[in-house]
Structure formats: C-alpha cells, structure tokens
Length: 226
Image (cartoon, rainbow, N blue to C red; front, side):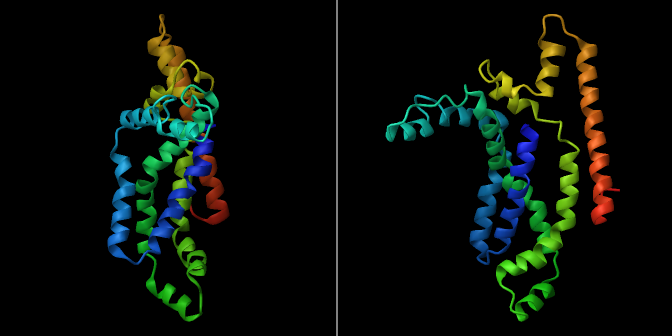
C-alpha cells in the first residue's frame, strides 16, 4: 500500500516539477529553486523523522497549534495509524522531489531546440509545446524509471518506517523489512531461516514484476531495459 501510494503520487510529481522548472527563463530564480528543492535529499532520515515528530506534536507542534487556533482539537498524527501512509509518502516526496527531477531536467535539456522553434512558428502555446515536444522527448526516460520503480514495489526503506513506527500504528506501518528485523534479530528466539525465506520471497516477487513490466513496455511502446 505504501509503495502503490508512493508510485501513484510520488512518481508524477518530479516530472511535473521538471517540466515547470524548464519553463522558467530567469536563470538566478531557477538555480535558487533547484538548490532549495535539492537540499532535503541530503538531510538524514533520522532528522526528517525528528522534524515530523516536532511539527506534528499534539502540544507544541506547528500543525496542531494552527488547528487549535481555529477552535479544533489536537490530532495525534504519529499515533494514528490511518495517517501513517500519508505522512510517510508526502514527507518522502518533499525530501526526494528535487533530486528525482534532475534526470528529467537533464532529458529535457537534450531535446532539439529546433523542435520548439518550429512549434513557436506554427503558433503553439507553451502548454502545447510541453504536451507535444517536451513530454514525448522525455517519455523513454519516464518509462525506464517507471520499470525500475515497478521492480522495487515490494521494498520500503527500513530506517524511516522503523523510526516512525510505534505500538499504536503497527497495523499500518509493519512492512517486510521491519518484519524480517523483528523475526530474525529482535525476537527472543531469532528465526533466521524464516526471516531469510521472507527476504528471498520478497526479491523473487520484485524480479517477476520487473520482468513483467519490462516485457509489457517492450511490446507496447518499444522502450525497455532489455
């Protein structure tokens, strides 16, 4: 659920961001936006989770203070399982959006400028040029990255989930990597064979998905990893 949510929401956002940034003509503003959006990528996951805990704190957090300012009641964001998916995914998007957009910005820069010039002569608006020049130009890159994302659909980073996990949201936050950790290390009697089997099964499913999506992409769009 976390990865499907992340793929559905998080995959298109760097593409849209790269397309919008490519439309900016003011170089200094463009560089400033790039630096600001790249910076969160270099922040430690521990720090990101600590920031979430502070911002969403029921007593001192900025969000809850804002809610109480308008007469609402404080919300236990970190202790409510139904909020876990959104907190995990959107904080990840904020952290990785700018960095993920680098590939698309690079692909956009390789598009032949004469295509844009011809479109302008034909009277195409900026939106039309994005639709008919920019997006087709970066479509192979989008497909390749989508295939790679599909090949890791069963993997969710251990560190961030483990730091955000608590007894009240375990039903929503338990993922394969945390299950392996609890079964193979944290348990009073570690079950190494069972935790190894879980990890192996996880990798097999990822491999099958990768091959399936790559085959489908090659037959439909003639763009694939191999």
